[in-house]
Image: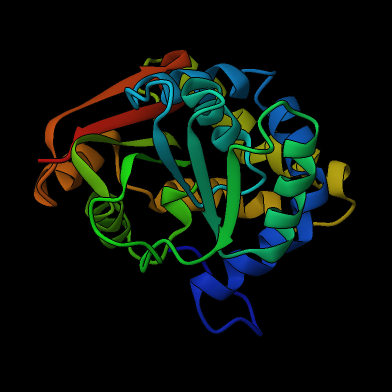
Length: 241
């Protein structure tokens, strides 16, 4: 289990504090620590949504809005995308980010919680979540909420760190992830803590096969997953019925 340090009373409170503290460097460090692969991963995940021009997408735990922007590319000027996150600092950074894109008129950011989404049933054409499913207090409830707000036939898509299985590569990856990422993260933000949480959060996170089972258990159909970059990340996809 991820140890919740004092004075935080819950995982949710701890995660909120972490992301509030790193929002200003989050995008830069993501790109650096992933060797620039994060852009490809997000674009691949967005492509699985089935979004069409004029569509209406939701990005849950949107953070700084990078996956939200990928959805906006797909829906075009006639479409609309909402990004929802519980962290004010991340949303502030997201609003800065979309000002640098052609998509600012298509995107709206809303403060809200992944386990109690502030939207009616059957509202969106898709719902995505990127690099956040391992941070929520209830994984099953989050997937269920995403499915609830998506129309029948729409997609629920998760992009998340996962557990590679290839020999040698797996050992090299875990050495980098468990030892070098916390060090580089500390150098990047100037203090310890947030990037030590990252490898610990993955240790407790279910294997990609188990996440697929959760997708099925909440009623999603045609569930599948794609392991990218040797299984460093996995994209899960399910269809709302």
